[in-house]
Amino acid sequence: MGALDIAWNVRNGITSAVDIVEEHLAAIDAREGEIHAFNLVLADEARLRAAEIDEMVQKGDDPGPLAGVPVALKDNLCTRGIATTCSSKILGDWKPPYDATVVTRLRDAGAIAIGKTNLDEFAMGSSTENSAFGATRNPHDTSRVPGGSSGGSAAAVAAGFAPISLGSDTGGSIRQPAALCGTVGVKPTYGAVSRLGLIAFGSSLDQVGPFATDVADAAVTLEAISGHDPGDSTSIERAPLELRAKLEMGAAAVRVGRITDLPAGAGPDVQERLDEAFDALAAAGAEIVDVEVPAFTYGLTAYYLIAPAEASSNLARFDGVRFGSRVTAPDTNQMYMATRSDGFGAEVKRRIMLGTYALSAGYQEAYYGRAQKVRRLIANDFSAAYEQCDVLLTPTSPTVAFEVGAKTSDPLAMYLCDTYTIPSNLSGDPAMSVPFGTGADGLPVGVQVLAPALQEATMFRVAAELERSQA
Ligand code: GLN
Image (cartoon, rainbow, N blue to C red; front, side, top):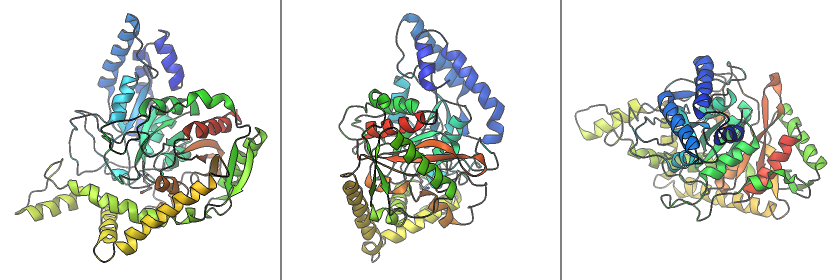
């Protein structure tokens, strides 16, 4: 049962939230051993909250649009009094003193947190193999990765452990695992969803967004978490997004852009599904227009200067003084060094070194400064393309899920997973992945729908048409 069906049943007293939670805990018991989607399952907390929801319904109170819906939370979202690890050793057993705004909003909408999901350490990676607590496996084939960095959240939804989950997306970390696990995954417009309580990776790129089994469930979840938050200075002063009203409108007369100068790299299976997606939208009455986005191809390069630069400064706070683990040493400097050497994994150290280099005196203008200019060009090129079309369609991931271990010794190969997702983080525009058939070895393929800032309603409308065309 999807999130909207669960909520309808719970609100109308047809199913109890307690039963819903037990069903999902049983699903977790059955397969979590082979998948490892979670760092922590909140069984007791979920049962207690479910009983509260059922009590509200009995009293005639409405628990909200996500009443009784289990939700899995990426373990870089702060949960009050509950360990939040970022899948890193350095946070030790640190327990945040507050909830992330998105966590509070989901709770206020009636959802039930069922667990904290595994990720690449500090959200740096594309396979969830960079976790200090071991890799997550793809529920469709456990010899494969689920994608990353929100691989645990994608796998939890794909395995039926929770109908919805939250991830974070700095360069593709929601959309790429969604594609590899056959779920819907959304990166909202930068500033549409609060980052308060999301442990920062690249502050100018990070956004929280939902995973779901279908477009309507993703819509109701994003509606619940979006809207202005005075606690996040980059939060846009707007009411929550309204997405469900337009879902049934179809794609008639929508102008769908095909990027003719898209960087190469997508496999033939992915390319075929994308072509079929264009055909499906054309059959539904959409107008397909060819557009150019010349700077798209420089996205990856600019991102690997900007994101590490921001990460190196954000991660400076993990110094053994304020958070989690500390390795004792004869003096403060040695303590910092020992704590950080022991606490961070190899990929995080690589990013910190790349970032401090890109920001160092004498190089800052050549690297970080230039990357910022490229970022502006990408945003400008998208704006120009959106004068000719309402949405753009691209592959999400160049390939289907790959084997565990296939890219761990080749960082560049891993980085190339995000060729098609990174540009919208740099521009701040929304983008989402919708499952669209299968590719090599019968594994899921995702198609990416991109839209101008705050045009999520149109993006969801097109995504819903893509979903409908496969029914
Ligand atoms: N895979 C990209 C990286 O490693 C994106 C990660 C993300 O979106 N958090 O940086």
